[in-house]
Length: 265
Image 1 (tube, rainbow, N blue to C red):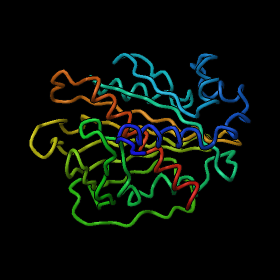
Image 2: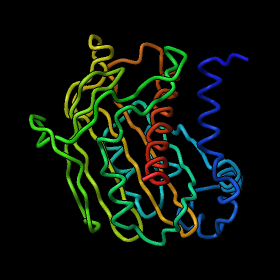
Image 3: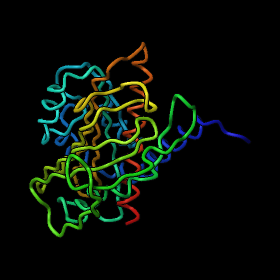
């Protein structure tokens, strides 16, 4: 039996979301609601059942799925005045329980070079496609000298890194990556510093016109992984729905990167 690109992509998403369903059902519901109090009872049940929730809310206001401890994410996204924003929440059950943020967990989020080669589903091409052909840290916003991934032995309150990534859709770009961490969670924000061009020709997003936010919250037997993408594209050309789907697929790809790194160090 031959499977099309969309079928394969859907299968991968379901596999990622459902791989830890049994474990997810063991999560304390009251603790989950405390971390994300905006969830409805139906959303809590859905997250426990499938391991994944998505939302495409209005361009202003509070993000629907953001952990309460990181409420400032909504303010940062709204400050961008995005025309597109997508968010997703995942429940992951690692082999080792995490009651607090550990240096190992922090190190996974700083292993930027391991993003090279991860795949996402391209709605334009109708198949899985490599997201980043190259990914590594550089010595500053000009991105001249390549740097190795950090090997943190402690969790820093704040950190600032710069990364070069060659994207299959938007070419080579430099990103500013900020980290804010405490014992309860880690917040990673990626912001483009260079103008992004679709297929190297069409102006897509200006400098600081795209933000990716990821928040990881240990809740004992499980980890919550929250992702949000906000963009202020140069033009939508009546492609808003397709762009939302594309950004949601990128969040999925980066979640799979995180979960794979965590489960297979």
